[in-house]
Image (cartoon, rainbow, N blue to C red; front, side, top):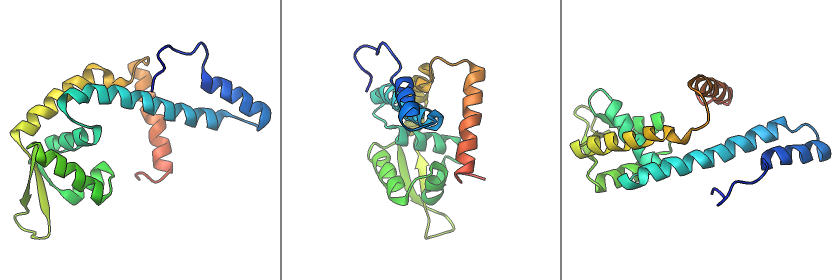
Length: 167
């Protein structure tokens, strides 16, 4: 949570100084702590933008994935893979979106073991409205130029690739 007033100093920089004095090199600790703090800042901004649309970020991502799909429908298993979520989590997300009438489940036409999730017209509208809201606040990513955002994305992709997130 953001403090009611900004601190008069950077607590991560201060922690890095102390870490260096007591433990040793602090660059990795400071970077990871910064990433975690920025994640909190971004989450707060995105949550605030999505709240009027009665969506969480996970549900918003699912709607966007379906909107971007060729037919507006995907197998639940593929949704879980693309969103990098456990099957239980994708089931919960789809349950909530279906209860809000933003998606519907339907049987796969050729594979009886597969359930498709299809975005509804209401889901498309809600997704478009929510997209306008999160893009209006740049997903909370403030203080960086377009080039810096591109560089940040590239640097974080290196970490993700090295960790096995994708090949």
